[in-house]
Length: 304
Image 1 (spheres, rainbow, N blue to C red):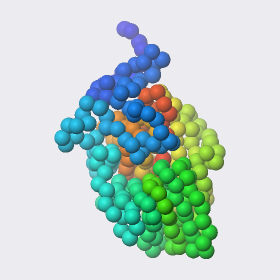
Image 2 (image 1 turned 90 degrees about the vertical axis):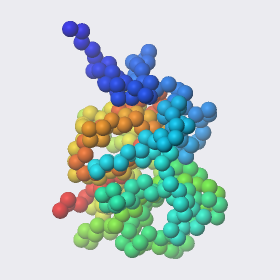
Image 3 (image 1 turned 90 degrees about the horizontal axis):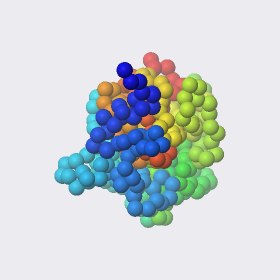
């Protein structure tokens, strides 16, 4: 009986699930999708596909009713063609699309905020903490003492609960925003955090080959963290994860296949995913470019 390498077997398995993606084994030995499916006419700034997504496969773009979005009891895939934009409550000149909310079963909210000319945020509810990540344009974060910080693409800010602040933009900008009701723990007090992905060190990932950065401190004051994870084409998670943590994910670059429960989904930049506790999860990067995704994970609190 002829035996095949693990990589060949992986590519064969993925090609079955992604038959409508026309996935094939390239000459270099990686699984890759046709450039006409994923590549736009021209590349733009960092994370440009988050705000300029393409439907895949291309020949279904104009099919009435077509969407890749899926919602199940323990996971959801929300793709850009499904976004329903409406004015964000109390925000000025800002449209938003809620991608993850407690209506799904999550204990946090994840939404896209599309700020326009002369736009401004509204404060979150009492005891709610906020994390923002800039995917397009630039915004200014100002706190109660008039200290301001200019946040460009790939920059982020964490704002503790009940901290007076505003986010302003004088030109179009797009943010991904996470909010959750803070889980107080003893005398631990979180602080405002401002940074950018490229300033965060790469962390060790024993048994894995992807690159990992954490955007928030790992101390007990913080009840969640945001990870930036990078995969080169052909790389995949070694561990088939099943755990008590919830996840909210936004693909910033690249494309691949995500296993959630018993389903396998083709995903690309601009797609958002919710993962409930204990749903089996696994990812493999495809195509010819890096995959980067931003991942919310609750941490530092007893599940009870």
